[in-house]
Length: 458
Image (cartoon, rainbow, N blue to C red; front, side, top):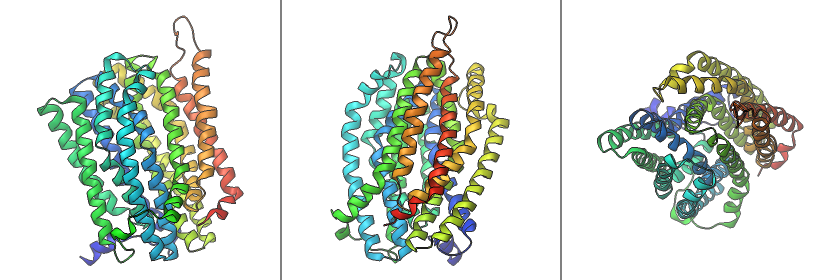
């Protein structure tokens, strides 16, 4: 029992060898991110195999709009995680308690906002993007269910961010695995036995996320030796709430910009027809798994930097940045190689259509070039965010996704138009994405080495 408690205990990243602490934190994070990715992936697999390719396209087309409207949750989660990690590293119990309470209150406000706004704008946005009539109703109902039942998604994101800030990545993983298993079971029951189709997978996701959020809240109550989990802290406190917003807004804006660029490019994707839309969904699902190690190391670096700048140990932060980036690069290279070797088998999970599998694999080979670059970007961005500099990664994201990626995608497709290809070459959508990733790695490395992020600590 004692060994089990130690396994789930928060990781103090201010002591010990940096790379060991980073790995100890990253491995559970990676497992958790895999479970998180399985939510949407299982939805896609079930509807693709039991409803059809159009249902698969519907679930994927709804994704960018969903991501755009949950940026509030992403922002609060990042702001809370940064503040919690720094106050945990500084051993400031009172500030830690106020930060967690303020984050919960902000989550309540954000949940109500997204429930109302999301249901109002979902269909108009889908129509604006030129979503094919054959999948429009499915996309709309899928989004309605996820927005109305968004409380579970909101509170899981924020509470798991708090747990990560405390160095506890293992508990969130366990709860996600439980929720993921529940999601898979409910997907199959709702789609196969009740014939609910796209609505069924959305309902299953909502129920599973509520369960994971409830488990995270229960875990926080168990950590009362680190902070005070009392109602008196769940109130408006301008100092802590505004700090959460100040630190979180750039991350939320970054997510919004990425989602907006995906929405704009989705309009271009839709112009190539249902088959390419479905292929894009498959590629993005596999891409999501390929990115998991990169994002996991980035999150670990945020917590590592946050705790150590809180303890004012900048030499340790720099040492951990080097070791963590090397680990991220090596892991990304291995994962990319495996996808190139076994990619077709992965694509076949989503559809039985051979032409769709081959088309998806062609696009995946283009993206593979950029995964190593993303490992560098996420690692150094994680360090800057953990230190409190969330603005620099935001501006880098704006440059790479808005200034570079979107114009390139449309421009390259326009320049490659022919009588046989009136919309241009569809590969240009993915080539533009890879170029933006490579530029992002170069710019992020420059700003990390410049070192201005050290001046942003709370």
